[in-house]
Amino acid sequence: MDALILADGEAPTRGELDLAWPGWDANLGLVIAADGGARHAARLGVAIDAWVGDGDSLDGDTMAALLAGAVPMERASPYKDESDTELAVRAALRRGAAGLVIVGGLGGTRIDHALANIGLLAMSELAGKAASLIDARSRITLVRAPGPDGAPVRRALPGRAGDLVSLLPMGPGVVGVTTSGLAYPLTDEPLPEGPARGLSNVRTASDAAVTVKGGLMLVVESPARLDP
Figure: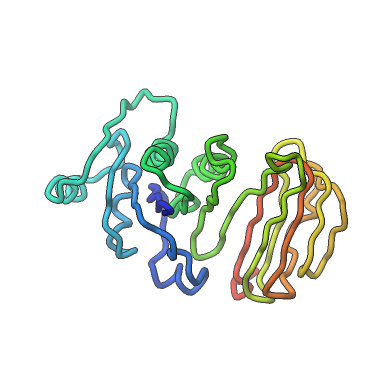
């Protein structure tokens, strides 16, 4: 069972997500709303299983609907150390989620919130779990290497030929990057922090993949139909 996290940024419609990322919701069995992210439930056609947050971005009508539906609520202090989205991630993990899909974590007026949400992918509690942030323009995942056995980590990147795939180091950089099915190949090469070499590769086959020997690397996929 994967969990859908509804964060409080801008979110696409379900139709937009279905078009950009077919099957994105195939394994969802749990929906956790992070504060004002609860408002996205209707446009995505999902029912909220639990709500968490400090309530500072939850409008009165949505609050009333949650109370009327007897949705379990975990109210946090506004003086907390965690973001509401982080609290939602932790709530999902406590409920046994095997993976996460975060919607509403990339758009909005605060780029710091978007960066913080991307950073959540590196939480130690998510090691070994599939986790992504998605909207109609991007799907972001993290490759964490080496694996528990010290071996390189291979990540399959299935999708449409022609779509964009950016490989971006997170932290001090990654080493031993090898790709297949991408137009601009890498063969056991580093991607250090700073240079943008891994930006805007192109999937040439539906079964592309990347292998990483060490480090944290963001994989950012974008539909080719987007304007440059």
